[in-house]
Image (cartoon, rainbow, N blue to C red):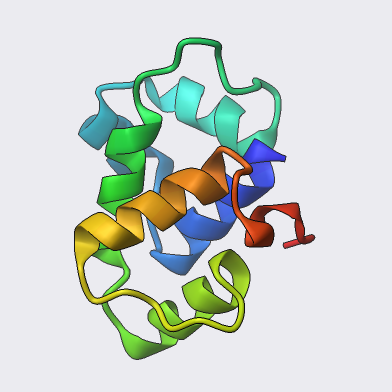
Length: 104
């Protein structure tokens, strides 16, 4: 579920709803509803790519990198390049990765 994956990334990076909303130019309540599952991912969304890049840039510490890798790309190392990490995160958020199917 998108909400669980988003919540995982927000907890991992210690990101507040208000911070993510500001970065993505989305209303605070929209982020809250996406995170809680009260609102599903809208069709034709255009913010997941920017969201993925934001999280990729925030996953810096070794513990964060290990946690992200364990859930998003099990058995692999977390990429050094933010662009590669953003691709993994986007696939994870859109449920296109092996880790997306796992319970978080």
